[in-house]
Length: 323
Picture 1 (cartoon, rainbow, N blue to C red):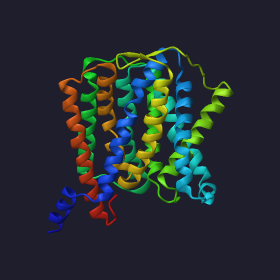
Picture 2 (tube, rainbow, N blue to C red):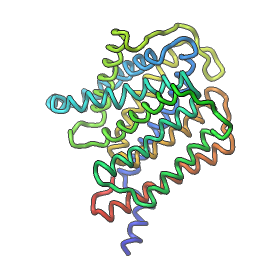
Picture 3 (spheres, rainbow, N blue to C red):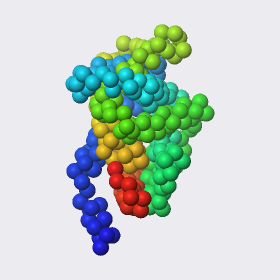
Picture 4 (tube, rainbow, N blue to C red):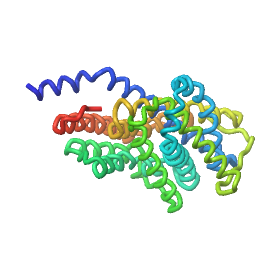
C-alpha cells in the first residue's frame, strides 16, 4: 500500500513541486537564449568580458528593486551572509557566464554546452560526498539517460571540432554552474530567492567591473549592428535581451525553482536549457532541429522523470522530506 501511495504522489505532485518545475522550465528557456545572442555580439568585436559585465550589470539593475522589496529592511540577513553572497556572486554567477562566453569564443556552442552541463552529475557526486546522499540506481539511470539525450540534442555525432582552450573554459563554466545549483539550494541563511539573485548579480557585476578596470579581463565593445532572427538590429537589442530575459528573469526563476525542487532535481531539469537552445537557434538563426535532436529531447525528459522518482525513493528510504 505504501508503494501505491508513493506512486499516486508521483502522478499527482504537490503544488510546490509543480511551481518548482514551472520556474525551472522558465529559467531554462530564458538561459537557453544566451548563446545565440552572445555569439552575434562576439562576432562583431565584443569580448566575453564586456558581454558578461554589461549583461550582469543590467540584470542587477532590473532585479534590485524586487530584491529590496523582498528584503523588507532585514539588512542583518545580508550582513550575516556576506561571505556566502561574495562566493555566490563570484563563483556561481560571474565565473560561469564569463567562462561560457569565453568557451563559445573558441569553440562551437554545442560542445561547450555539453561540457558545461556535466554540472548535474557533479551536483550528484557533491551531495553524495558532502552530505552522504548516495544516489540510487534509478537516479543514476536517469542521469545516464539524460546524458545520452544531451549528446543526441547537440548532434555531436556529426563531428564537432574541439579547442583545448575552449574545453578548459567550458570546464570552468561547469564548475561554476554546479556551484550555482548547490548554493542556491541552501535555505540556512534565510535569504529569499529574489534577494539572493539580486545580491549575487550585484556582486558579480562589481567583480567583473574591477577585473575590467585593472586589465585582468579584456573589455572591448562595438556599436556595429547584429544579425538576429533574419534581420539586422542595433547592438543594444541583444544586450537588453541578455540582461533582462536571459539573466534577471532566468536567475530569479532558477533560484526559486531550486528552493522548491532541491539542487539535484533542479540541475537535471535545467538540462532542458539545451533543448530550448536548439529551439531558440531555430527561431533566431533559422536552424531547424533534426529528428535525432527531437529524440534527444525526449530522452532528457525521461531522465528528469527518473531522477525525480529516484529522489522520492531516496527520501522514503532515509526518512528525509522530499524536495
